[in-house]
Amino acid sequence: MHENSLFVKFKNLLGEIGFLSDPVDCRPYCRGARYGQGDSLAVLRPDCHEHVVEIVRLCREHHQALVLQGANTGLVAASTPDGSGRFLVLSLERLKKYIAIDVVNRSVEVDAGLCLHELNQALEEHGLFFPIDLAANPSVGGMIAANTGGAKLIKYGDVRQNLLGLRAVLMEPAGQILDLRHALRKNNTGLDLKHLFVGSSGSFGVITRAVLQVHYLPRQTAVALVVPRDQSAVLELLQVLERDCGEYLSAYEGISGAALDAVLRHVPAITQPFHPEPCPEYCVLIELSSRADTSTGLDLNVLLSTCLEKMFGTVVENAVIGRAKDLWRIRHAISEAVRHEGRVIAFDISMSRSNLVDFRAQALQLIAAHYPWIRVMDFGHWADGGCHFNLVWPSDASEEFSDHIVQQIRDQIYDLVVLRHQGSFSAEHGIGPYNQMYYQRYTSQMQKHLSGQIQGLLDPENLLGLCRFGE
Image (cartoon, rainbow, N blue to C red; front, side, top):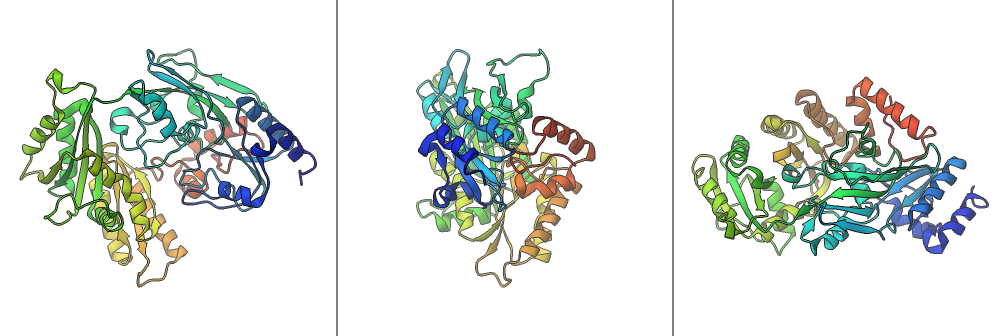
Protein backbone atom coordinates (compact mmCIF):
# COMPACT_ATOMS: atom_id res chain seq x y z
CA MET A 1 0.00 0.00 0.00
CA HIS A 2 1.45 3.42 0.94
CA GLU A 3 3.09 2.15 4.11
CA ASN A 4 6.66 2.66 2.95
CA SER A 5 6.18 6.08 1.33
CA LEU A 6 3.15 8.23 2.07
CA PHE A 7 2.48 6.84 5.53
CA VAL A 8 6.07 7.40 6.60
CA LYS A 9 5.79 11.01 5.50
CA PHE A 10 2.58 11.43 7.47
CA LYS A 11 4.10 9.85 10.58
CA ASN A 12 7.09 12.18 10.38
CA LEU A 13 4.85 15.19 9.84
CA LEU A 14 2.20 14.53 12.49
CA GLY A 15 3.87 12.33 15.11
CA GLU A 16 2.18 9.48 16.97
CA ILE A 17 -0.69 11.54 18.31
CA GLY A 18 -1.47 12.96 14.88
CA PHE A 19 -1.24 9.77 12.80
CA LEU A 20 -3.45 6.79 13.64
CA SER A 21 -3.21 3.55 11.68
CA ASP A 22 -4.27 0.88 14.17
CA PRO A 23 -7.81 -0.27 13.20
CA VAL A 24 -8.98 0.01 16.81
CA ASP A 25 -7.80 3.63 17.02
CA CYS A 26 -9.35 4.44 13.63
CA ARG A 27 -12.74 2.85 14.31
CA PRO A 28 -14.41 5.86 16.01
CA TYR A 29 -13.55 8.01 12.99
CA CYS A 30 -15.18 5.52 10.62
CA ARG A 31 -18.65 5.64 12.18
CA GLY A 32 -21.09 8.49 11.76
CA ALA A 33 -23.32 9.97 14.43
CA ARG A 34 -26.30 8.11 12.98
CA TYR A 35 -25.42 6.84 9.50
CA GLY A 36 -22.21 5.91 7.77
CA GLN A 37 -19.73 3.21 8.65
CA GLY A 38 -16.71 2.20 6.65
CA ASP A 39 -12.98 1.59 6.74
CA SER A 40 -10.05 3.97 6.53
CA LEU A 41 -6.42 3.44 5.64
CA ALA A 42 -5.47 5.75 8.51
CA VAL A 43 -6.59 8.87 10.35
CA LEU A 44 -4.69 12.16 10.09
CA ARG A 45 -5.10 14.62 12.97
CA PRO A 46 -3.18 17.84 12.27
CA ASP A 47 -3.14 20.63 14.83
CA CYS A 48 -2.05 23.49 12.59
CA HIS A 49 -2.86 24.99 9.21
CA GLU A 50 0.61 24.28 7.81
CA HIS A 51 0.19 20.55 8.39
CA VAL A 52 -3.12 20.61 6.54
CA VAL A 53 -1.38 22.25 3.58
CA GLU A 54 1.26 19.52 3.49
CA ILE A 55 -1.30 16.74 3.87
CA VAL A 56 -3.32 18.01 0.91
CA ARG A 57 -0.18 18.44 -1.17
CA LEU A 58 1.01 14.89 -0.41
CA CYS A 59 -2.41 13.37 -1.07
CA ARG A 60 -2.60 15.01 -4.47
CA GLU A 61 0.94 13.91 -5.29
CA HIS A 62 0.11 10.30 -4.36
CA HIS A 63 -3.48 10.38 -5.76
CA GLN A 64 -4.79 9.55 -2.29
CA ALA A 65 -8.49 10.15 -1.45
CA LEU A 66 -9.50 12.03 1.70
CA VAL A 67 -12.66 12.31 3.77
CA LEU A 68 -12.84 15.50 5.82
CA GLN A 69 -14.16 15.25 9.37
CA GLY A 70 -14.87 17.82 12.05
CA ALA A 71 -16.83 16.76 15.13
CA ASN A 72 -18.47 13.97 13.09
CA THR A 73 -22.00 14.97 14.11
CA GLY A 74 -23.41 14.98 10.56
CA LEU A 75 -26.36 12.80 9.61
CA VAL A 76 -25.76 12.14 5.89
CA ALA A 77 -22.50 10.10 6.05
CA ALA A 78 -20.46 12.91 4.47
CA SER A 79 -17.75 12.82 7.15
CA THR A 80 -17.06 9.08 7.28
CA PRO A 81 -15.27 6.81 4.78
CA ASP A 82 -17.15 4.21 2.79
CA GLY A 83 -16.44 0.47 2.83
CA SER A 84 -13.87 0.55 0.04
CA GLY A 85 -10.93 1.08 2.36
CA ARG A 86 -9.38 3.58 -0.06
CA PHE A 87 -9.87 6.75 2.01
CA LEU A 88 -7.81 8.51 4.62
CA VAL A 89 -9.77 10.44 7.23
CA LEU A 90 -8.55 14.00 7.72
CA SER A 91 -9.87 14.92 11.17
CA LEU A 92 -9.68 18.57 12.19
CA GLU A 93 -10.63 17.89 15.81
CA ARG A 94 -7.20 19.13 17.01
CA LEU A 95 -7.23 22.28 14.86
CA LYS A 96 -8.77 24.52 17.51
CA LYS A 97 -6.01 26.65 19.03
CA TYR A 98 -6.82 30.00 17.48
CA ILE A 99 -9.70 32.24 18.51
CA ALA A 100 -9.67 36.03 18.13
CA ILE A 101 -12.74 37.99 19.21
CA ASP A 102 -13.36 41.49 17.87
CA VAL A 103 -16.04 42.90 20.13
CA VAL A 104 -16.27 46.21 18.28
CA ASN A 105 -16.78 44.51 14.91
CA ARG A 106 -18.95 41.83 16.50
CA SER A 107 -16.93 39.11 14.79
CA VAL A 108 -14.64 36.23 15.68
CA GLU A 109 -11.90 34.42 13.78
CA VAL A 110 -11.43 30.78 14.74
CA ASP A 111 -9.77 27.55 13.68
CA ALA A 112 -12.17 25.26 11.85
CA GLY A 113 -11.94 22.45 14.40
CA LEU A 114 -13.34 24.55 17.25
CA CYS A 115 -16.73 23.22 18.35
CA LEU A 116 -19.89 25.26 18.79
CA HIS A 117 -20.01 24.92 22.58
CA GLU A 118 -16.35 25.94 22.90
CA LEU A 119 -16.95 28.95 20.67
CA ASN A 120 -19.92 30.11 22.70
CA GLN A 121 -18.06 29.62 25.99
CA ALA A 122 -15.35 31.97 24.74
CA LEU A 123 -17.89 34.49 23.45
CA GLU A 124 -20.07 34.48 26.56
CA GLU A 125 -17.69 36.54 28.68
CA HIS A 126 -18.07 39.32 26.11
CA GLY A 127 -21.85 39.06 26.12
CA LEU A 128 -21.84 37.50 22.65
CA PHE A 129 -22.84 34.20 21.05
CA PHE A 130 -22.94 32.40 17.71
CA PRO A 131 -26.67 31.79 17.26
CA ILE A 132 -26.77 28.32 15.71
CA ASP A 133 -29.04 26.45 18.13
CA LEU A 134 -28.54 22.68 17.91
CA ALA A 135 -28.75 19.63 20.13
CA ALA A 136 -25.41 18.51 18.63
CA ASN A 137 -21.98 20.11 19.08
CA PRO A 138 -20.51 20.41 15.57
CA SER A 139 -17.23 22.02 14.56
CA VAL A 140 -17.11 25.39 12.83
CA GLY A 141 -15.79 23.82 9.64
CA GLY A 142 -18.51 21.20 9.71
CA MET A 143 -21.21 23.82 10.18
CA ILE A 144 -19.94 25.69 7.14
CA ALA A 145 -19.72 22.50 5.05
CA ALA A 146 -23.36 21.68 5.89
CA ASN A 147 -24.64 25.29 6.12
CA THR A 148 -26.22 24.51 9.45
CA GLY A 149 -29.44 26.26 10.43
CA GLY A 150 -31.03 25.32 13.75
CA ALA A 151 -33.90 26.54 15.85
CA LYS A 152 -33.01 30.27 15.81
CA LEU A 153 -32.72 30.66 12.03
CA ILE A 154 -35.86 32.79 11.78
CA LYS A 155 -34.15 35.59 13.74
CA TYR A 156 -30.43 35.13 13.10
CA GLY A 157 -30.15 33.24 9.82
CA ASP A 158 -28.08 30.16 8.98
CA VAL A 159 -24.30 29.79 8.88
CA ARG A 160 -24.10 31.27 5.38
CA GLN A 161 -25.71 34.49 6.61
CA ASN A 162 -23.23 34.72 9.49
CA LEU A 163 -20.05 33.81 7.60
CA LEU A 164 -17.81 36.80 6.89
CA GLY A 165 -14.73 35.00 5.60
CA LEU A 166 -12.67 31.83 5.56
CA ARG A 167 -9.37 30.28 4.61
CA ALA A 168 -9.26 27.02 2.66
CA VAL A 169 -6.59 24.67 1.37
CA LEU A 170 -7.19 23.59 -2.22
CA MET A 171 -6.59 20.29 -3.95
CA GLU A 172 -6.02 22.17 -7.22
CA PRO A 173 -3.46 23.66 -7.30
CA ALA A 174 -2.30 21.09 -4.74
CA GLY A 175 -1.89 22.57 -1.28
CA GLN A 176 -2.52 26.14 -2.42
CA ILE A 177 -4.26 28.50 -0.01
CA LEU A 178 -7.36 30.55 -0.76
CA ASP A 179 -7.32 33.22 1.93
CA LEU A 180 -10.64 35.08 2.21
CA ARG A 181 -10.46 36.06 5.87
CA HIS A 182 -12.15 39.43 5.51
CA ALA A 183 -14.17 40.55 8.53
CA LEU A 184 -16.30 42.65 6.20
CA ARG A 185 -20.06 42.81 5.92
CA LYS A 186 -19.87 44.76 2.67
CA ASN A 187 -17.44 43.83 -0.09
CA ASN A 188 -18.44 44.01 -3.76
CA THR A 189 -14.97 43.66 -5.30
CA GLY A 190 -15.81 40.54 -7.30
CA LEU A 191 -17.27 37.09 -6.80
CA ASP A 192 -17.78 36.13 -3.16
CA LEU A 193 -15.87 32.86 -3.38
CA LYS A 194 -16.33 31.87 0.26
CA HIS A 195 -19.84 30.74 -0.61
CA LEU A 196 -18.42 27.97 -2.80
CA PHE A 197 -17.50 26.11 0.38
CA VAL A 198 -20.81 26.62 2.18
CA GLY A 199 -22.97 23.52 1.87
CA SER A 200 -20.28 21.72 -0.15
CA SER A 201 -20.05 18.74 2.26
CA GLY A 202 -16.27 19.15 2.35
CA SER A 203 -15.82 18.43 -1.35
CA PHE A 204 -14.31 21.70 -2.60
CA GLY A 205 -11.43 22.26 -0.19
CA VAL A 206 -10.30 21.99 3.43
CA ILE A 207 -11.52 24.92 5.53
CA THR A 208 -8.93 25.70 8.21
CA ARG A 209 -10.07 29.08 9.51
CA ALA A 210 -13.35 31.01 9.55
CA VAL A 211 -14.45 34.56 10.34
CA LEU A 212 -17.96 34.62 11.80
CA GLN A 213 -20.44 37.33 12.62
CA VAL A 214 -21.60 36.98 16.22
CA HIS A 215 -24.50 38.51 18.12
CA TYR A 216 -25.18 39.95 21.53
CA LEU A 217 -26.78 37.60 24.02
CA PRO A 218 -30.40 38.54 24.72
CA ARG A 219 -31.10 40.20 28.05
CA GLN A 220 -34.62 38.82 28.25
CA THR A 221 -36.58 36.01 26.67
CA ALA A 222 -40.17 34.82 26.84
CA VAL A 223 -41.11 31.24 26.03
CA ALA A 224 -44.45 29.49 25.62
CA LEU A 225 -45.65 26.06 24.58
CA VAL A 226 -48.92 26.59 22.74
CA VAL A 227 -51.68 24.24 21.58
CA PRO A 228 -53.17 25.54 18.32
CA ARG A 229 -56.77 24.94 17.30
CA ASP A 230 -55.67 22.69 14.43
CA GLN A 231 -52.86 22.44 11.87
CA SER A 232 -53.94 25.47 9.86
CA ALA A 233 -53.91 27.48 13.08
CA VAL A 234 -50.15 26.81 13.38
CA LEU A 235 -49.57 29.17 10.47
CA GLU A 236 -52.26 31.61 11.59
CA LEU A 237 -50.49 31.89 14.94
CA LEU A 238 -47.14 32.41 13.23
CA GLN A 239 -48.51 35.25 11.12
CA VAL A 240 -49.94 37.04 14.16
CA LEU A 241 -46.66 36.68 16.07
CA GLU A 242 -44.61 38.02 13.19
CA ARG A 243 -47.01 40.93 12.77
CA ASP A 244 -47.36 41.84 16.46
CA CYS A 245 -43.99 40.75 17.90
CA GLY A 246 -41.85 41.44 14.85
CA GLU A 247 -38.11 41.17 15.31
CA TYR A 248 -38.50 39.70 18.81
CA LEU A 249 -39.64 36.33 17.45
CA SER A 250 -36.54 34.10 17.67
CA ALA A 251 -37.95 30.55 17.49
CA TYR A 252 -41.12 28.84 16.35
CA GLU A 253 -40.86 25.06 16.69
CA GLY A 254 -43.64 22.61 15.88
CA ILE A 255 -43.87 19.43 17.99
CA SER A 256 -46.27 16.59 17.26
CA GLY A 257 -48.10 14.93 20.13
CA ALA A 258 -46.36 11.62 19.34
CA ALA A 259 -42.93 13.27 19.62
CA LEU A 260 -43.90 14.95 22.90
CA ASP A 261 -45.22 11.65 24.23
CA ALA A 262 -41.91 9.93 23.37
CA VAL A 263 -40.00 12.56 25.34
CA LEU A 264 -42.26 12.12 28.37
CA ARG A 265 -41.85 8.32 28.33
CA HIS A 266 -38.09 8.21 27.81
CA VAL A 267 -36.84 11.29 29.68
CA PRO A 268 -38.14 10.89 33.25
CA ALA A 269 -36.90 14.31 34.39
CA ILE A 270 -39.32 16.04 31.98
CA THR A 271 -42.93 16.38 33.13
CA GLN A 272 -46.08 16.75 31.07
CA PRO A 273 -46.37 20.54 30.59
CA PHE A 274 -50.15 20.60 30.12
CA HIS A 275 -51.06 18.35 33.08
CA PRO A 276 -53.81 17.65 34.08
CA GLU A 277 -54.91 18.13 30.46
CA PRO A 278 -53.81 15.30 28.12
CA CYS A 279 -51.00 15.67 25.61
CA PRO A 280 -52.21 17.63 22.58
CA GLU A 281 -52.10 16.33 19.03
CA TYR A 282 -49.75 19.16 18.16
CA CYS A 283 -48.08 22.06 19.94
CA VAL A 284 -45.71 24.91 19.13
CA LEU A 285 -42.72 26.15 21.11
CA ILE A 286 -42.44 29.94 20.80
CA GLU A 287 -39.57 32.15 21.91
CA LEU A 288 -39.27 35.93 21.92
CA SER A 289 -35.91 37.50 22.72
CA SER A 290 -34.42 40.97 22.93
CA ARG A 291 -31.32 42.85 23.97
CA ALA A 292 -33.52 45.40 25.72
CA ASP A 293 -34.20 44.70 29.38
CA THR A 294 -37.45 45.48 31.20
CA SER A 295 -36.14 48.87 32.37
CA THR A 296 -36.78 50.13 28.83
CA GLY A 297 -40.48 49.42 29.21
CA LEU A 298 -40.36 46.29 27.07
CA ASP A 299 -41.52 43.15 28.88
CA LEU A 300 -41.50 40.19 26.53
CA ASN A 301 -43.56 37.98 28.85
CA VAL A 302 -46.30 40.61 28.87
CA LEU A 303 -46.03 41.03 25.10
CA LEU A 304 -46.27 37.27 24.47
CA SER A 305 -49.07 36.75 26.98
CA THR A 306 -51.10 39.63 25.54
CA CYS A 307 -50.62 38.37 22.01
CA LEU A 308 -51.72 34.82 22.91
CA GLU A 309 -54.68 35.98 25.01
CA LYS A 310 -56.14 37.73 21.98
CA MET A 311 -56.21 34.38 20.17
CA PHE A 312 -57.57 32.15 22.95
CA GLY A 313 -60.69 30.33 21.87
CA THR A 314 -60.09 31.03 18.19
CA VAL A 315 -56.53 30.18 17.16
CA VAL A 316 -55.13 29.02 20.52
CA GLU A 317 -56.66 26.32 22.74
CA ASN A 318 -54.08 26.09 25.53
CA ALA A 319 -50.68 27.49 26.49
CA VAL A 320 -47.94 27.22 29.08
CA ILE A 321 -45.97 30.44 29.44
CA GLY A 322 -42.62 30.70 31.21
CA ARG A 323 -40.43 27.81 32.38
CA ALA A 324 -38.15 28.49 29.41
CA LYS A 325 -35.46 26.00 30.39
CA ASP A 326 -37.95 23.17 30.90
CA LEU A 327 -39.77 23.84 27.65
CA TRP A 328 -36.57 24.00 25.60
CA ARG A 329 -35.45 20.72 27.21
CA ILE A 330 -38.51 19.09 25.66
CA ARG A 331 -37.57 20.35 22.21
CA HIS A 332 -33.92 19.31 22.46
CA ALA A 333 -34.78 15.86 23.85
CA ILE A 334 -36.96 14.81 20.91
CA SER A 335 -34.33 13.26 18.64
CA GLU A 336 -32.90 11.06 21.39
CA ALA A 337 -36.30 10.08 22.77
CA VAL A 338 -37.64 9.06 19.36
CA ARG A 339 -34.71 6.69 18.85
CA HIS A 340 -35.89 4.69 21.87
CA GLU A 341 -39.15 3.94 20.05
CA GLY A 342 -37.59 1.83 17.29
CA ARG A 343 -35.83 2.32 13.96
CA VAL A 344 -35.97 5.98 12.92
CA ILE A 345 -36.66 6.85 9.28
CA ALA A 346 -35.55 10.46 9.31
CA PHE A 347 -36.53 13.21 6.87
CA ASP A 348 -34.90 16.66 6.92
CA ILE A 349 -37.15 18.57 4.53
CA SER A 350 -38.30 22.09 3.79
CA MET A 351 -40.78 23.93 1.60
CA SER A 352 -42.67 27.18 1.43
CA ARG A 353 -44.44 27.72 4.75
CA SER A 354 -47.70 28.01 2.82
CA ASN A 355 -47.41 24.35 1.83
CA LEU A 356 -46.61 22.83 5.22
CA VAL A 357 -50.18 22.13 6.33
CA ASP A 358 -51.15 20.41 3.08
CA PHE A 359 -47.91 18.44 2.97
CA ARG A 360 -48.32 17.15 6.51
CA ALA A 361 -51.93 16.10 5.91
CA GLN A 362 -50.99 14.29 2.70
CA ALA A 363 -47.96 12.61 4.27
CA LEU A 364 -49.96 11.43 7.30
CA GLN A 365 -52.62 10.04 4.97
CA LEU A 366 -49.99 8.24 2.89
CA ILE A 367 -48.43 6.57 5.92
CA ALA A 368 -51.78 5.63 7.47
CA ALA A 369 -53.06 4.12 4.21
CA HIS A 370 -50.01 2.10 3.21
CA TYR A 371 -47.85 1.66 6.32
CA PRO A 372 -50.23 1.64 9.31
CA TRP A 373 -47.61 0.18 11.68
CA ILE A 374 -45.31 3.19 11.17
CA ARG A 375 -45.54 5.99 13.73
CA VAL A 376 -45.11 9.63 12.73
CA MET A 377 -43.10 11.63 15.30
CA ASP A 378 -42.43 14.87 13.48
CA PHE A 379 -41.19 18.22 14.70
CA GLY A 380 -39.45 21.16 13.14
CA HIS A 381 -38.84 24.77 12.33
CA TRP A 382 -42.16 25.89 10.89
CA ALA A 383 -41.11 29.54 10.80
CA ASP A 384 -38.47 28.80 8.14
CA GLY A 385 -40.42 26.07 6.36
CA GLY A 386 -38.36 23.26 7.87
CA CYS A 387 -39.74 19.96 9.11
CA HIS A 388 -38.08 16.89 10.56
CA PHE A 389 -40.78 14.53 9.35
CA ASN A 390 -39.39 11.60 11.31
CA LEU A 391 -41.01 8.19 11.17
CA VAL A 392 -40.45 5.30 13.54
CA TRP A 393 -40.66 1.62 12.73
CA PRO A 394 -41.55 0.39 16.24
CA SER A 395 -39.53 -2.38 17.82
CA ASP A 396 -42.73 -4.36 18.39
CA ALA A 397 -44.28 -3.68 14.97
CA SER A 398 -46.39 -6.36 13.32
CA GLU A 399 -44.26 -6.02 10.19
CA GLU A 400 -40.61 -7.06 10.21
CA PHE A 401 -38.22 -4.23 9.37
CA SER A 402 -37.52 -4.06 5.65
CA ASP A 403 -34.94 -1.92 3.87
CA HIS A 404 -36.98 -2.28 0.69
CA ILE A 405 -40.09 -0.80 2.33
CA VAL A 406 -38.05 1.99 3.91
CA GLN A 407 -36.68 2.89 0.48
CA GLN A 408 -40.21 2.87 -0.89
CA ILE A 409 -41.36 5.23 1.86
CA ARG A 410 -38.44 7.56 1.24
CA ASP A 411 -39.19 7.74 -2.47
CA GLN A 412 -42.85 8.52 -1.84
CA ILE A 413 -42.22 11.18 0.82
CA TYR A 414 -39.50 12.88 -1.20
CA ASP A 415 -41.65 12.87 -4.33
CA LEU A 416 -44.38 14.52 -2.28
CA VAL A 417 -41.95 17.14 -0.94
CA VAL A 418 -40.05 17.97 -4.11
CA LEU A 419 -42.45 17.29 -6.97
CA ARG A 420 -45.78 18.30 -5.45
CA HIS A 421 -44.67 21.01 -3.01
CA GLN A 422 -41.48 22.28 -4.71
CA GLY A 423 -39.53 21.67 -1.51
CA SER A 424 -36.08 20.40 -0.56
CA PHE A 425 -35.17 16.83 0.35
CA SER A 426 -32.31 18.13 2.53
CA ALA A 427 -33.11 21.33 4.37
CA GLU A 428 -30.13 21.42 6.74
CA HIS A 429 -28.06 18.25 6.64
CA GLY A 430 -26.48 18.62 3.21
CA ILE A 431 -25.92 15.98 0.56
CA GLY A 432 -23.40 13.30 1.53
CA PRO A 433 -23.65 9.69 0.31
CA TYR A 434 -26.91 9.31 2.20
CA ASN A 435 -28.62 11.84 -0.07
CA GLN A 436 -26.56 11.41 -3.25
CA MET A 437 -29.22 9.40 -5.06
CA TYR A 438 -31.86 12.04 -4.36
CA TYR A 439 -29.53 14.80 -5.50
CA GLN A 440 -29.20 13.04 -8.83
CA ARG A 441 -32.96 12.43 -9.05
CA TYR A 442 -34.28 15.89 -8.25
CA THR A 443 -31.55 18.34 -9.27
CA SER A 444 -31.83 19.95 -12.69
CA GLN A 445 -29.39 18.97 -15.42
CA MET A 446 -28.04 22.51 -15.72
CA GLN A 447 -27.48 22.80 -11.96
CA LYS A 448 -25.65 19.46 -11.92
CA HIS A 449 -23.63 20.44 -14.99
CA LEU A 450 -22.42 23.75 -13.53
CA SER A 451 -21.82 22.26 -10.07
CA GLY A 452 -19.84 19.41 -11.60
CA GLN A 453 -17.68 21.85 -13.55
CA ILE A 454 -16.86 23.76 -10.37
CA GLN A 455 -16.04 20.54 -8.51
CA GLY A 456 -13.88 19.37 -11.41
CA LEU A 457 -11.97 22.64 -11.36
CA LEU A 458 -11.26 22.45 -7.62
CA ASP A 459 -10.78 18.67 -7.36
CA PRO A 460 -10.02 17.22 -10.82
CA GLU A 461 -9.17 13.74 -9.49
CA ASN A 462 -12.18 13.46 -7.13
CA LEU A 463 -9.95 13.02 -4.10
CA LEU A 464 -12.02 15.07 -1.61
CA GLY A 465 -14.99 13.38 0.02
CA LEU A 466 -17.70 11.15 -1.34
CA CYS A 467 -20.14 13.71 -2.78
CA ARG A 468 -20.38 14.20 -6.52
CA PHE A 469 -22.18 17.30 -7.73
CA GLY A 470 -21.97 16.64 -11.47
CA GLU A 471 -24.25 14.69 -13.80
